[in-house]
Amino acid sequence: MEKLGSGDPQQIGAYRLLARLGAGGMGDVYLARSDRGRTVAVKLVRRELAAQEEFRARFRQEVQAARQVGGFWTAPVLDADTEAEVPWVATGYVAGPSLQQVVGRDHGALPERSVRILAAGLAHALKDIHAAGIVHRDLKPSNVLVTIDGPRVIDFGIARALETVDESGLTRTGALVGSPGFMAPEQVRGDRITPACDVFCLGSVLAYAATGTLPFGSVDSGAHAVMFRIAQEEPDLEGVPEGIADLVRDCLRKDPGARPTLDRILERTGAEDTVSGGRSRDPWLPSALVAQLGRHAVRLLDTEDPQGPVGPVGPVGLVGAGGVETPVRDRGPRAAAAGSGGPGSAEPTPAASPEPASPAAPPPPDQLPTVAATQSGPTPPPPGPPPGGPFGEAAAPGSTRAGRST
Image 1 (cartoon, rainbow, N blue to C red):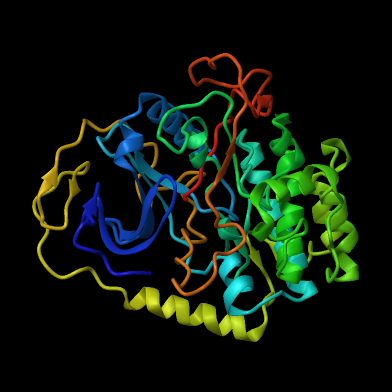
Image 2 (tube, rainbow, N blue to C red):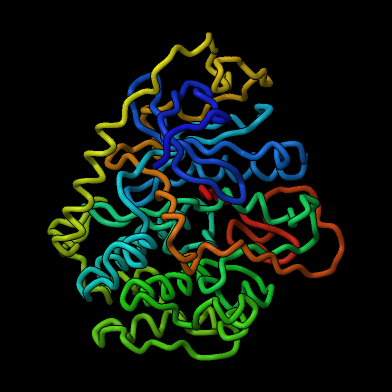
């Protein structure tokens, strides 16, 4: 968490900003509180992206889809203004670090029991995401937050609005977005994407959690080398505990049809008696991590509203650091107000984005620039429901609906 800078806004919509949580390819993420006192994470889209009509249309579609995700194992999308001059989306805040930070910096590899319960929680989260017709396609340690109750998944699909935007800010046909080391073979090849893609990514996350290393090698050798190994070679599972090695290996099958279903994964974790209702009934983390999570929660309680008055602002205003309001367009209907009921606003967890890594630390394995592998082909039709049902998407020219915070 970082203090707000002079260039940061003080308020976005009805949310008073408290601190900066991080930044990514889509924009900046802030810790904020609603006018009713709920702590949330607000992602503010970059202006250059907001100026592109194709991006805005895709972003609108992805946010609408992400609002349909219910359940206990994800960070709910609470509110959004996709029509604002600078669009934004608010999700529940999860008071916990990312799995990337826990394994890569704070603790190291997790014990087998913790990895089993992690697998069960992520399988539950993916079931909820898939039930809404969404394929996550970017499940990785930085998109998994660790809480005392269990893991929580964030960023399920909104980032796919970036799929048609290249490094120069121009749209490109057939862009594929993913993170080196945590992509499925069908993503690398540009084949049709199904929910089995997320099962492969789950296997990579579990291998990382159990060993602290990537199953297809370090990205130090180059992103394309890693993607080649993902598509052509078998994973290196040395160090994965014997009790879960077979499950991880099956999740990492090259053939999507050979991977286990999420229900089968839940059976094989053996965690049915310890994981239910969005939480682990018994402590699932080493004691040192439990203590760290307690300190994290205390920091959140100590976070105060920034001092200084905020200029007058309506429910859709975006106020700059100097208190000057930036005009925005009329806001579209709110599907869910902060703190309201509904499948996307269940309150068992407040939730959001991981804290940025220390500047002195080396780049974590899933924090390299997002890779976009493009293919030539005809210009895709305007965004709309994918053919063949909610999972009948093609990874190359099209995209599914989704939602994430980068």
